[in-house]
View (cartoon, rainbow, N blue to C red):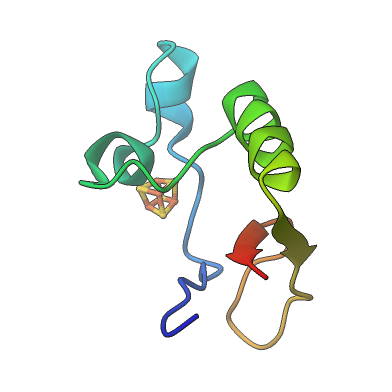
Length: 74
Ligand code: SF4
């Protein structure tokens, strides 16, 4: 993997959009549809796992946010 997104603590997970049933802005606007959240993320994670991707979570460090799952092709 050459590049990995790291979420900062400034992310608030777009509560107003999610309350309206919309995706967070970053998920909605990703041109490659590489970001998922909630139930959609769980389904995508399982699909990628079955395709042989390594699924992992990085611990939070200074100014990054916990709870983000990454998938990387092994
Ligand atoms: S657009 Fe994405 S990164 Fe920005 S606040 Fe919303 S969920 Fe967080």
